[in-house]
Image 1 (cartoon, rainbow, N blue to C red):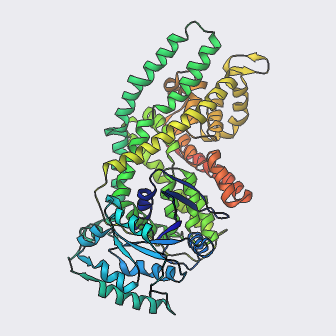
Image 2 (cartoon, rainbow, N blue to C red):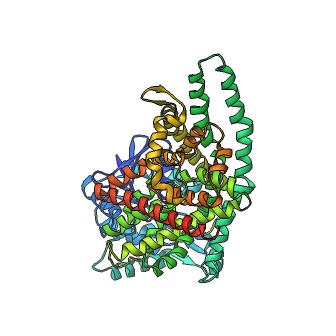
Image 3 (cartoon, helix red, strand yellow):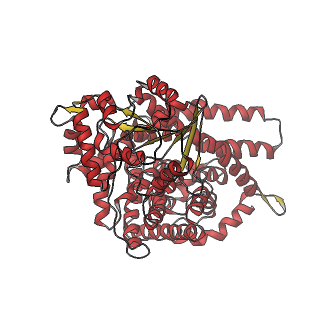
Length: 582
């Protein structure tokens, strides 16, 4: 038996899917379309989680996927998840799904939220009016799921619904409104708490300083109150003792092996791992904004600003995701309706400062801007947004001339974030960071150590190594930016594999005296120019590969080349103009 989960975005469909399938699930891509395909098992029942959509008008890839699946795969049963607090909008998709002639059960989710809004739904009346079984549930709390599963397993495959899409959308909504009016009562509760908060948070003037203030608080939490102190303790009580222990154990081994393990592996990987608490704290703060419902408001706030520079507001969704990682940000551009908007969003998303860049920001801002560390790091995040706006304006009026699309986004009610969910999100990011340290950063640390200790004649001093010669070839390109040293050059080259590797490479090439060396080689001005280059230059190979897979070789080459040129130009301006005043 195959059942399909169908519903609007943000109705709790994924939460229900996770409850039904537990850990027995996997994610892939739909054939021929790069849209996530989630499948799992409930005993011997295959559960397919279809993409969240509002209708089946086959405009977006998600709508095409859902329509094709129901047309060609013909599941045995549809579980249509509905937001109980917004029946009218949700039942429009139900009416379209009914046209496929597939048995269907309505899972009336978020009943607790509906009651809090003064909405009282009679499930039996609703079931009679639509001709479908209706099961009230609260998926987030597991309420009603046993009854839903019982209904699924007992379903006889009969189709009795009278709810169909009528000749026009207007007729369909008129019919739905009659059903809703007969199935629910609504006591006016006045303005809800969310509406009262939105009067302030979405105020045309106050919205922007509130957004900046909340962003600053997240950085303050990360760098001053929690993340930085935890990082110091992590280094002092775990990483340093571990390095000393390994050094003692290897005291009788050959000099080159000691250097490989201590300077290469432990020095390279450890110099990045020390930032693990900071990254987890940052995403704990971002998760608070997401779980509370504020992040959707942030997208709406930024949409207003983006439209003033001619950029479609929908592009801000991939941008938000880009603060975590550019790979899912580029993949999320699939949800945009037009091909031009998908390409534009993908080109802009890597300009958002992903978490891989954070260790570099932390090191340099801590050394050169200790008193203003939060403001300096925050300025880099805001600069990425600003540059994306400018590039959006340029590209919209050159390569991607097109009418702007409206921004459609759910405005969930504000809620208190759940600690378990916050921790899960933060730990997921931490695990990903640890995996990268154990694989990519470990491998590159060994390679960088080898290149920095050998040339074609054998083991040599680092200044005569293969790495130094490679760096000297690239260094003149960086000289006008204020950091034309071979050490900076090779760090940026290895950073193409993963931005965190910039730090591990520097730890190796400066032979363990990183802080002292950087304060000798860099000034505050050149340090900031270097950070801006890190922010804007060519993303890591995983992003490049994703871009090629999604949009082809030409668009991939455009992304690589324009970001490299952009990073050089902006860093050049910062250094050259700054030199006139400093």
